[in-house]
Each structure stands twice: as C-alpha cells, then as structure tokens.
Image 1 (tube, rainbow, N blue to C red):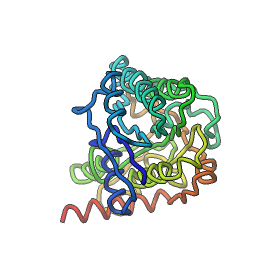
Image 2: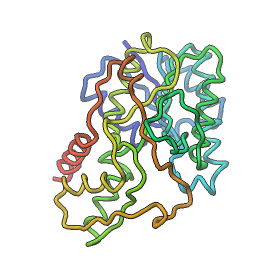
Image 3: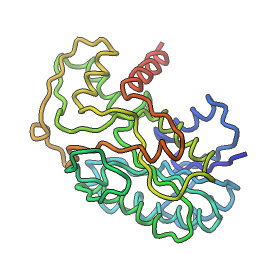
Length: 291
C-alpha cells in the first residue's frame, strides 16, 4: 500500500487531495503535515518529519501563493518556494522517497504563441514565478532524487480564497464588474489536480523523473472564465471585458500560459476533463454545501 507524506495539508489543494483520496477510496495512507507542525524552511524539522513518516511518496502542496505580495515580500516567497523546497527534496532523497512537487505556469513569460511544453525555456516575469522556478531548480539539483514536478495553472475550488469564489461574491455585491480578457490559460479544478497527484503517487514506479504539466483541457481568458461561472450561477451581474493595461497589478502576468499536457497523459494515462466541466462540478459542490 502507498503511504504519502503530504505537506500543505490545510491549503486549498492539500485539502482537496485528502477529500478525493477519501471519496475514491484511495488504497493507502496519507500522513498530513501543516505549517504549525513543520516549518519547511527549517531543514532539521523537515528531516525529522520525513524520517518519521514512513512514507514512500512525499507530496509538496505547501507554497507561498500571494502573487502580487511576492513583489514586495520577495525574500519570504523565495524562502518558502525556493529554499524550503530544496529542504524537502534533500530529505526525500536521503530516505529514498518519490517527490511530487506542485509548480506553476508563471515560470514562463507568456510570449509563446502555442502551448508550453515541459522542456520549453523558462523566463518568469514576476517574483512569484522566480521563486517557484528556484524550487524547481533545487529539486533538479538533488542528485539521485526521483521526482515529478507538476506545473499547473489557474487553480480554483469551492473552498478557500480563489478566483471562482471571488466572482461569486462580486456577482452578489455589484451590478457590473470588469474582468481581464487578454490573458489566456486554463482554469484547473483543484479536485482534478488532486486526482492526478494521487494517480502519479500510485504509479510512481512507472513515472519517469522530470517535469510534467497538468491542467484541465481547453483554454480561455479570465473574462471567459468569469462568464462561465456566471452562466452556472444565473447571475444578473454584467461582466465587462477589459485589458491588462486597464487593470494594473503589482505583478505582471503572462499573456499566454497554456500548458501542453501530452507528456502527462501519455505517461500517466490521466484523462483530462474540459475546464467548463470543472466549473460546473465546482459550482454544484459549492451550491450543495450552502444548502
């Protein structure tokens, strides 16, 4: 049976990993670790936690995810996403564990016209992306470690703070809202990524070490994402499409960050779901839990 050590178990993705494992009757055990139990920036704490877990797989869902704040909290972002990831990687190697680490589309600059492949050149344009790329490099520098770096994008869920829930709140607070329509990517339901993580953990002996891309299928802009949420919600709120220049943020975002998932589906056998299906699934879950 597979035993997983899960860092970041109280975050949005970590909680979805636990929920999906329970709902799909995962034939294994998940040992959860929160920040209160282990500060991943402390290498000694990480070593002790990994050594005592008895796990075969380490899943790292812990991360600094405040994209705009990272522009001013650069050191903190780098410590958590870069240095701490190295701590986990080295501990996993010492104890002969397979590491699944979650990274981001923001390691790319968004200038490519087509979908980004795992081997494409990275060039982050914000501090968050640079910190996540540092984490990837720390893993790759850990000689002898078996790992899967899984880059994802536009992650959302019916829990915690994210774009999906923000839109539902704004639909109820305003008659009109504006959403950026010139950045393109793929909304990814956290539950779908959680399913992929568990499958990779179960098939770790068949998964070659390297970088993988995972998101739902298809692509859209943030405006189209918001419009799909609105369609499911039946809101009367009007959504206006605007440009990036009309909505300036501290951190620059890539204009195109669509990910090529062909390697992931070929090696893992994971079937992708359309992003619109994810929105419907998420809305139904959100609605049912409010009843």
